[in-house]
Image (tube, rainbow, N blue to C red; front, side, top):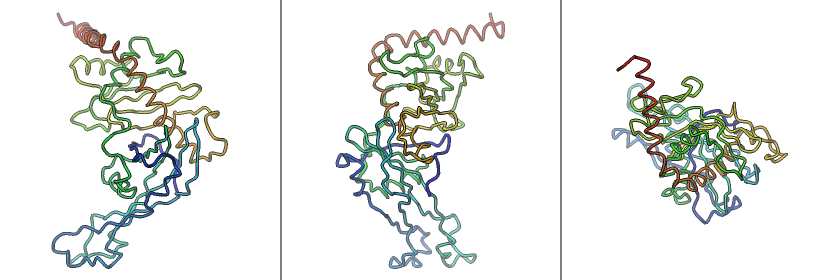
Length: 322
């Protein structure tokens, strides 16, 4: 059974190939995929390709194709059940394979399909490469546009958001009910926090985001942000990286009930903010950035210089440096 979306799980989104122009085409998605187990060379003679226990199976559960709706976007939630090899594959004497139930585990990956502009997208709730690869194999890689990353941007939207926030200009568009309510943190270089390459500033701990200003002063890019945005009467708290990875803080996100189909159950409601953010909010942010790009490029160098001067002056005063 599909569980509710947990808070702060990372989500990767792909566009399906153009032949998938609505959720009604999901019947073309394979129901199962099998993969021969991988064993060390000395055990290869133990693998009988005619034996079904020699395979790992990927399949769908809870894929009833229920059509759900949030703010006009149709979506459906499936779960990919993925078998995987355990570390312990062989018996104590290292002479044979363990029975399949002892050497095989499984995990379930929530998977959301949604429509946007006569295209179908899939959001996979994991960034673990082995799990992503498994779900892609189940969908069939030929059904996925792996070349174009739907939410990736070559432009640094994160720096633009920081500039808008610090420049006291948080309204993104006068005609749209989108407001930067608060930028909770900025994470430099790696969304998942590689220890050797990770800096973070949090506004309620560092009131003026000094860490972020220092990153900009050194000329390093801001590649990911955790933010709170107002979307009409909804409050959306999420992380977004320029590589397209998204993570939602479900505990602090609240969705306007008028955006929800009245028939949505609790599990579907938990996924609805994810669909809204990925299908509408982030694409809207990218469009707003493109509209603002020329102004941003004209002023951003001086803006970074101002942040550098602020950091230098604060350090000078703090340590009475002459």
